[in-house]
Image 1: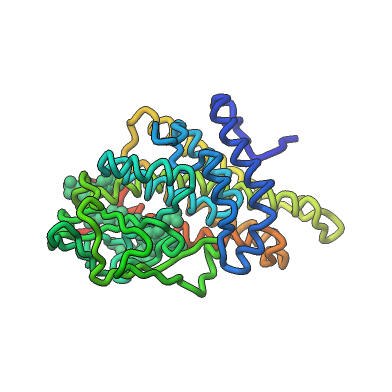
Image 2 (image 1 turned 60 degrees about the vertical axis):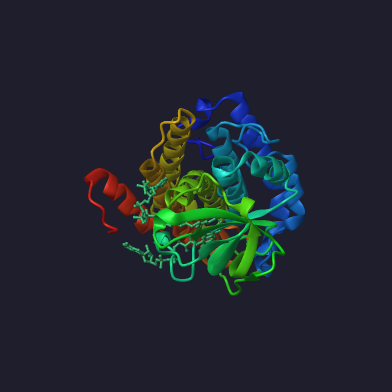
Length: 389
Ligand code: TGC
Ligand code: FAD
């Protein structure tokens, strides 16, 4: 009889180093994170006390070479995020934002002085970052953003607002995208430090999803930053979008982790729970649900493994990332809903992880490009016709 979730033995495709990273992340989640997550989800807080450990384990900016970063390959990085999201999407979000949306833009578009100042501190969790692209009126269409940066002598002055920003109020530094002119081509990235006059944050309350993650609004009102805080190599909308490629890649892996956690919970429950004098796992309809879950997990895992190998060969194209983000998160959400159904009434109780994953995945399906936006990115790639403009 088959045990576990790796039905096709995809684990055989991994190197020993990749397995070691996976195991370290799994151990951290099982021992340190799982005992805390339910309480934090209830309270709507992130377990900040674990952040230094994440830094010590080398989980931040893990694919960057140098600057005190681990220099892992992309498959090892993906496995790490898969295991973190097995714990909670909020934990993976924390690592994604710090690595892909804060360290990556500094590494890719920053000056050498900015890299030396920020990357080692961000890697070791001495500093926390956030990424401000979305605005109240511009989510899927970030090119329309209204946040402006105006050069004034030896400063830049920022005015505008960013919405739905993960870690906004806990961040020491915000990577903020603003227009220096009227067109999307004038978009540049700016580093805004916490406490800068004219920069304020407040948390978004009342979330039913990603509760164990801080989400904030950022406001800039005549916020004056030094001229050297611009990311000098960032020019145009392509710069923030290139950061999204990194984060979407990690989310495609992470979603597999949330799906595995739901599947394992549903399988164990179905074998234990008896109705009509036998385990519900013996009923054909329940078996069909479990089979659909495992089939889609197997396909999703194969997809990201190939994606990671392509990324390591530097052959990855953004629409390929879109296909994986769309498919894996869309299916993880469906798997979580099926698992919730298999658990019956217990499926809505936070004694089990399923409802938490299900609620989280609603956000994951929306952020970093909604499911439908990714359909249109792939659609544009295969037809040559742009549905956006
Ligand atoms: P478009 O004309 O397509 O592109 C403008 C310029 O950007 C280039 N480009 C890319 N470059 C790198 N990577 C990509 N994926 C790129 N996509 C496009 C493109 O070549 C062009 O360059 P150039 O030199 O020709 O000017 O731009 P558009 O305005 O038509 O928009 C396209 C669209 C809709 C696909 C894009 O805007 C989009 O992806 N929208 C979704 C927005 C989104 O995903 N936001 C995420 C915000 S961050 C977040 O959610 C964090 S969650 C964090 C957590 O994990 O907690
Ligand atoms: P909208 O763009 O208004 O979309 C609403 C609906 O319209 C969606 O169904 C969408 O698919 C559909 N739609 C829009 N355009 C089209 C079209 N052309 N064709 C067909 N359908 C269309 N952003 C950041 O910058 N940094 C962060 O750290 C961050 N963290 C987040 C954390 C959470 C918990 C959440 C929920 C969001 C976060 N976001 C962040 C914002 C996220 O990226 C946006 O919510 C997302 O890009 C969608 O934008 P929107 O919510 O404005 O929806």
